[in-house]
Image (spheres, rainbow, N blue to C red):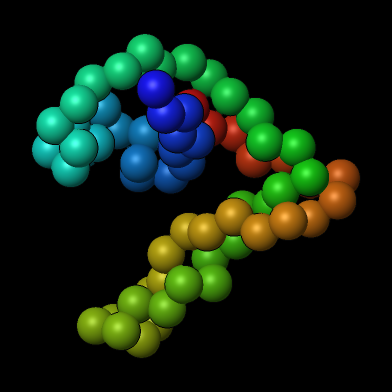
Length: 64
């Protein structure tokens, strides 16, 4: 089996089922020493970006 940490819109069950065609057990999770940032540039709309996580000591990202 494969564990997958989801954050942002990837926590939406219907969206992920469309992408993976696989359903799995879902539960809340935390990633310690990581930070949520918006550093992924949207090439179609330069004024918007996408969420990402980066290593950062002392930070926590909530997800599933």
